Length: 438
Picture 1: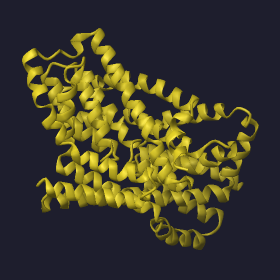
Picture 2: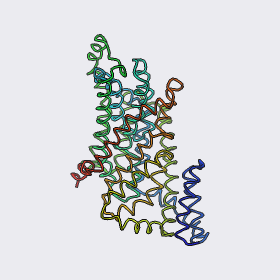
Picture 3: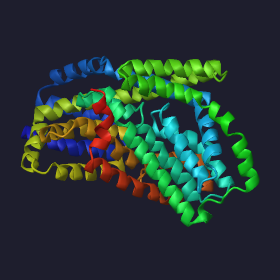
Picture 4: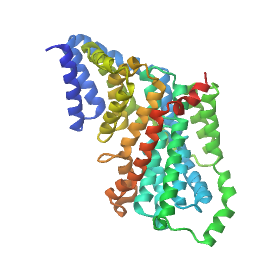
């Protein structure tokens, strides 16, 4: 069999295995090992299998991932999300749909200490959804805002997906992380505007608080705001340090984890049990990410040896005059994959295939990285496999049907259409901050 056709066949085999619910890391490893043995020979395939775990795990840039994960786990265990939502609730409850606005803003704030969409959706789901349902909010709005706002954690630093993209695309991870700030804020702002408009036009979605409740909320605002100082410290330590060039992404992860631990100890919110749980959570997710990443590295070599990467580069040569067509085509692919695969799998499967095409077209890899992560996160709230939706469903139990949650996120998907059009049409929105770092 021609090696090129064999390389294309491995793509079909890989997607079939994933469709059969074979773990993505296992599917990548099996296909890569078998493919390398076919294209070269078994000793070479086994040699690559022995070498890859060390060469991948020894990457200095990847050491940011366990540190960011540890920081997020400590922040979650120490109750930062609780303080954030309490402050946001007190400050924004007077607005139309105020509790939903508060949940959205608290999720954006928690994103600066978390980096995981699923963790953010779970944490805010436990805090915000019971409050909104108790206040008589529409169930679709109450659950939809939490599931959707959780995706902000993939853009606002620290972002595990952006670190992984930076490693595979070989671009500055510091600039990439900073590039996610404005798109993340823009997405959160679009959500707020939509909530305000909907609740203003249809007050039944979110009943207003009475005057006595509003008076109580106003009285406690400043004391609640003071409780959010740990988040300000983390933002200053991570985003400020990266933007100012004071720390590298790896150092930012270490600083963030140390700050989160120190703050939680000073507040009396960290004990041995909670710290142990945070360590277990960070190690488990790190192992999962690295296992899939090693399979992706092996598969990249297979695609290169079979000539698939070169074929794709040649295919886009005739489209070079209109790169927008390629971006639109890739957008459709990412949206479809997002309906069925988890974010980590989508990124590590597609990077070896699509990055050579983007480089050939001369498109900015920082900008493309933000576009990719945005599409991957949109998949987290898109049926039938929107993972954030199922996380929220696990929080609310039988109280809210799954399709009510999917209908609720539909309004937020409409906001994503507007945001994505802006980010694709005006790349400077994404590149403004990273360009200032030069």
